Length: 90
Image (cartoon, rainbow, N blue to C red; front, top):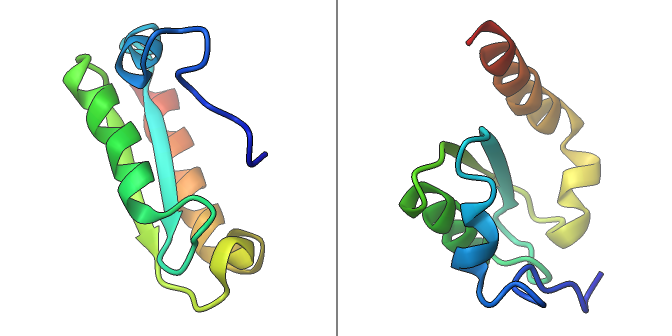
């Protein structure tokens, strides 16, 4: 997981997300996550939007670091359910 690089073999993150421009995307950040910090998630969101894609982004406030997404099940589930419902109805 630490070695994953969206840009690897794709030129750049911007080029990688251009392939997704027609697809809706959702990014979630955990406020205290140092493995995938907020600025990284915002850069992904911004790159998708710059490529003409739609990307919803939400920040979940949690003191639990990267594991916060496992512990904040209500928040993650709510954002995911809303996103999927919106995608399905469009």
